[in-house]
Each structure stands twice: as C-alpha cells, then as structure tokens.
Image 1 (cartoon, one colour):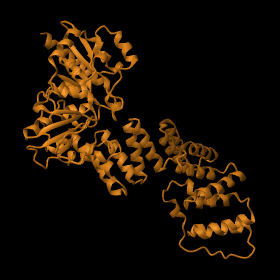
Image 2 (image 1 turned 180 degrees about the vertical axis):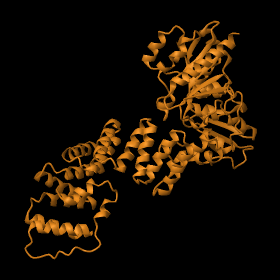
Image 3 (image 1 turned 45 degrees about the vertical axis):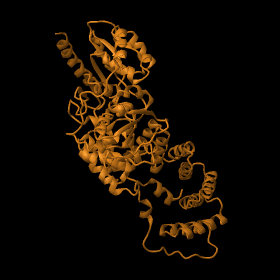
Image 4 (image 1 turned 60 degrees about the vertical axis):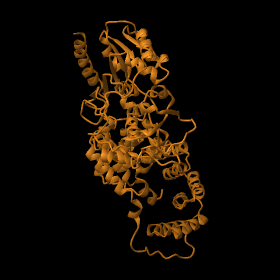
Length: 555
C-alpha cells in the first residue's frame, strides 16, 4: 500500500494532512519515457507539496503505462473523494480492490463514501473489512464507532471504540466517542473520565466541551457544566441554541430564575421542540403588555404535569384583568373546567375565538417575572369533583387502613423517563406495610398487573381513570400519595394533598437541588437519590418515614 495513505489513516492527529506538506518544492524533473513507478513517485512528491491537480494528472499517466498499480488507483480514489467526485473515486477504489482485495485503505475510503450517501450498512461492512485487514487504520475504528452510533447500536459502537483504543490508547477522538457512549447509557462517571482523557490529549472542540458539560450537568456539578458550555459556545462555528438552552437548565436548577427562565425560551429552537410550538398571528405575551381588558390564550405544551403545575398562573392573569382561553390536551379539560374566572377550555384542534395575546404555559413564570422568592405557591388551586370522589370512596370501601396512592413510573416517551421512573420490583418493600396501596398511574405493564394481583393490599383501576378529573377524584379519596416525578405528583400537590415525591439524583429543574421541600407545592416532600440510580436508599427513606407517618395517623 501507499505509505502516504497509511500515514493519513493511522495518525490520531486531526490535522494530519498539514503534517505532510513541505515548505520547499521537491525538485524532481520530469523526463521523457518515465516508467509508471517513476511517474507514481513524482506524483507522490507533488502530493506532499500540495500540488493536487498536477499529482492527479501524473497518477493518471502512470496508469496509462501500467494499469495494475494498485496504490495509484487508491491515491486517485483518495484525491477524487477529497474533491467530492464520489463516482470517480468509487471507480478507482473498486479497481484497487480488484487488483488487491486486501487493500484496507480502499475498503476504508469506500465505506466513507457509503456513509456520505446515507448507506450506513454498506459503510459498516466496509469499515469492518478495513480493520480486519489492517487494525492499524485508527480512523477506521473511529468511523466504525460513529456508524454504529448512527444506527443506535450502542453495544457495537462501544466494541469498536474499545477495540480502537487497544491499538491507539492516546487517540483523543476515540476517548471522546467513548464518553458519548457512556453518557448515553447513564454511566456519567465513566463519561466524565473519558472526556477528561480526551481533553488531556488536547481534543479541544465545541462538541467535546458541550457533551462534557452535559455530563457534568447530569452529575449536578453545575458551575463546571456552565464553564464547559461557555467554552463550547466560544469554539462553535454553528448554531449554539442547544448549548444555551442547557445553560438555562443549570441556572434553573441553581435557583437562578432570572437568567434561567430567559434562556429557557430557547426551547422552541431546539431539535426536540422546534416543530411543536403553536404559532399564531397574534403576539406572544411575555409580560410586556397590559392584560387589562385583553383576552389571553394559554397554550399547553410538553407534558400533562407541566400544564398542571403552571396553570396556577391563570389566577394571576385574571387578577390583572385578563379574560382567559385555555388550549389544553383533551384528558385535562374536565379537570380544568373548575378554574376561576370562567376560563374557556379549548381542545388543540378546536377553532379559535378572538384573542389578543397567547402564551405557552411554561412561559408564564417568565411572563410574571417569577423568582425563587415570588413563586405563587398556592396551598391548592385544583379540586376534585365531590360526586366523583364519593364514587371512589364507595369503590375503595370502608376501612381503618390508610389509603396510599402509589406511582413508580411515568410516560415511557418522556425524554428522561429512564432516570425518573423505576421498576415495580424496587418499590415492593413499601407493600410490606399492611395499609391499602392504590395505583394512581393509569398504564401499567401486564407483568406488573400480575405482580399487583398477587398482593393482598394493592389495587389498580386504570380502566376507571379516563381523564384527570377521575384521577383527581381518586387521589382525593386517598390519605397519602407516594410517587415518582409524574403528572400524578403534580395533580395531588396542586390539590393540596400530602405528596412524597421520589426523585432521581439529577432531577428536573423545578425540584432544584438538595432541599427536601418544594417552593412550588407546600404539601410536597422530596426524597432524593444520593447517587445515580440508587432507588434502594430512596425506598428505605420513604419506608422509614412511612412508619412514622402511620404511627402519627393512628394515634
């Protein structure tokens, strides 16, 4: 194989091409009747000098004399690929493989062309062949890892990165991708180590600092995360919206609502949200204009719990003289009919009456200039229907046992569900208490239903909870709610019920850090993981507190 290509694809220096230029032009005078090998050598010298066009012509002349020069086909394939002439590159590289099927460089370059065309399967096959033939092709290991990442095959991606690091332990980009893999599988401490190693090897890219920032954020090391987000912004040559948005999460978790809520508006420009914003010809209201005598359309966004939490601001808008329209998800509509001021409820697809301004529900804290000290923490602002509550009390029956609502998981489509939810098995120690446990989450797995049916003190009424009004009535008939971060927690706390919320190590921003009470809900108590994924200690804390709670309630 040609030494030039070997150096290009073996080095772990991202500026490899610069390392093979020379300051003075190599003096090789063309002579008449040069052999193919002599033309090849002359072309190689021109390549090193950066005279790509001249080198390409010399390589072509070499093939006229000797069409079986494998490395010349490879070099022409490389040149054409760099020039964006992919069909021509494929032809040359294919010819190189016809001459020598064990040309690892050719397999590598053809795989790269396949990736650029979106043919990931062909690319993976090519990269696998390249590293099998020549494990010293370090960039082939990296690109194989990238290709597997694009397919979502994290196991294979990690295998490729691990294999590459065996040959190239100081390859900064492989450490970077290993960090990505650890992060995507919640192995944040290992991700931290990988990103630290990449930085030590002088990998100093915007992507590295951004992903390192995300890792530090997940570890609740927020000041450090903000430092790396800023580094990522300074190094970026593209859109920095995602970075700035994650800065908002850090500020909000730290209780800095002034900076956090302003940057939180960037959510509408992120990949996850940019197509979800409801846009109207009327202006968005963020607190600048007077609402006196105006009609404000409040629009639901994100999850049910978000709407339940921030719908409290409706009362503040009414107090400023506004008439309110609420555009809500259908399951929330019956519950929200009770809101003060005769607010009109609209479905997402309903025709719109006249209104002056609109405001997404999670922009209301910004619009009302909310700080940590001015959160409108009403003791209760949603209420259950008395008739529905009576029906649930009849269903549950008379008993001296306390009735405890329980929820261990939320919507599996939630972006952070893998952290905020737990398996039913982890919460089973709570059922050792003889009280009645009522599941307040509508959906459960068939396997979970089997487990619950074998517990004498557990009940699930999913089919009887068609909307949040029925769920609110069930919650109203209970004495205590113990759950993870789901809409049931928001609903119960908005009703003023006693709620024990079980939180992951890195919680949603609204729960802040370290504290065991919520500034949003006076009746809520927070139980936090002390380390990532440690639900066992949370259940132990809750169980211990439950013993005290039961003792007080019964005496």
